[in-house]
Image (cartoon, rainbow over the protein chains, first blue to last red):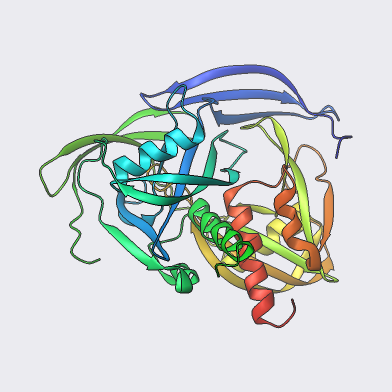
Length: 185
Length: 185
């Protein structure tokens, strides 16, 4: 819809800052003259990757403690891209750090955002195949237990209460679409 | 996996605060003795709703300016639940505020999280049907343009660059599963 005229940014001010987060207050004037002040996380420009690893007709998932929810969550390996890394390079590094495998082939599925009213976060979801054992030291405080989940029953993951994050659910469905297009499901 | 022993929370301190966000620094000791300090958004306990409205074999979507990405994004109506509201009550209110319809029937699909390493956010995704015109005044700065998208072609939404948020993508796939189970797709 090209006829939508974006609001004018009247001002952008940093209102709070921690080691990890910088919160901005943004004053806007919409095309109809309405003004609003919204808060957002300062855009970092740093994208992330999520890898759906497939080996022997199984998905590989990991369990990781997440302090936002104070629980162990089941999900696909993921992480922020480092400066200068391509999506595939970051995916291979994260896979080696979190799962102990490299991948010979990555297939890009989709770039997915998160709560864009507040965040500019973009996550590149890829399939990883042709796995070979190789580990890199990450910054994980404890080993991440792995789970192999049969492709033929992959949608049953939705019934696991520990598998409930939006981008993980998107990755599961996108991977199934891709496998079906390939005639593998 | 019941044998995972959660880390001990050694301390939780507020390190930054704005009108909307409170950032906490959490000091943890994992069961293997490893210590880490992580930052997270303070859990608010307030859940959200997202409504997939269906009318005349079409989905209804809205376009809304999102300051996190400084763009107009296409998505399903959504919003935070108010104190004391049920999921269906909040869904009906948001639908009236953002789309100008109430719904006679809601069907719960799934509760979905978002980046649980940092956030405790939980969004209840529901289908809304039996729509009737009724508006409530929301806090939107400008009217939200609506789009009706045919169910028979619903997956083509994934090719629209403006439809890319993880929970929206999850809602689209979950709605398709539900429609198929009903024999309606």
